[in-house]
Image 1 (tube, rainbow, N blue to C red):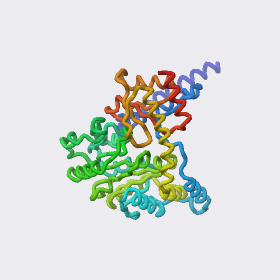
Image 2: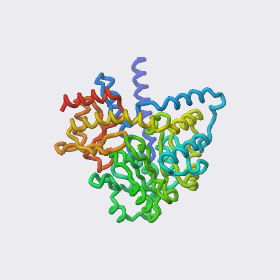
Image 3: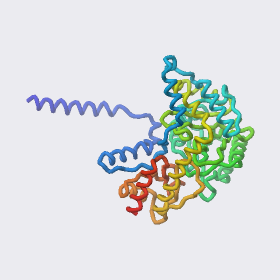
Image 4: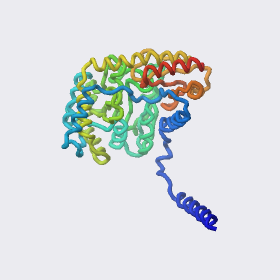
Length: 407
């Protein structure tokens, strides 16, 4: 009898929960986006690993090497300070802003006022959110590169903006299609996202590209936002769009400690622009989050003062890995541009495959190696695959051998 009653109560409870649950619905904005590809796919990879398959992941661009020893020492020492654990300024501490200004002057030749033209961020994703909130109203348009970083698109849609893709094509060295851009009606466009050295293609910026972007921004009344986290990875000439005269009037540049200094989990980045733009972003940021832990900001300032030898040592590791990634591309029959910069290798798949997932799923299930299909970066990436260099040399060699055996 008790068991019967318990079952009845359980059924009644489930029914009530189902009715109650049907009353709740997500915000309409969620219908325009899906869960981030890597969030979904890495669950599958984790399940395969739990089943003992030992998947080698060459998907995520999360640097697996540490920052400089001095950076870690600064963090440890500063964390011992009993007075350094409170809320920090929304604008970042002066030591970090000053370090970013010195870094821009030394490596990019760009002079920034550390008091008014720099805003530290909790990573670039936060910056994409805050800049979009500061400049774009619902219904306004945003220019997004195709292929490009998926977050430019997803966050724009979440905030009610209309995404307008502009083409990057391999035949043009993955530069913007200027004829397409010049033909566009940009009267409703508020922001244009750019990213060089480009992710995922590895295409490098030129002074001429940045000059043309600044000219386009001025003529069309558009704010160009250049996302610049890869300029120190396998790239001999770090460039900033802010080096173009007058760029600060119409451009914002992001930079990140994640890629350039092996600090992805620290969540420290920055943006630079004119004082008015920075103040608008601060108005948004100060209503959403707080400043970063003081010890982390001091450690980041130490990292930014690294000399050329540290960057050279970091790139020596990436250069070895890049050679192995190129061997993997050849083993898959893919073609690639050897002049690519950044921490990925981008390659075109053979014409024998109907689509890129025919290749990447075969590599995952037969060779137990996870690669990123290029379609997640836009329609112009549909025939490409991306390999991350954020993997130990021995695991890259093992991935190469597995692929050679499977293919």
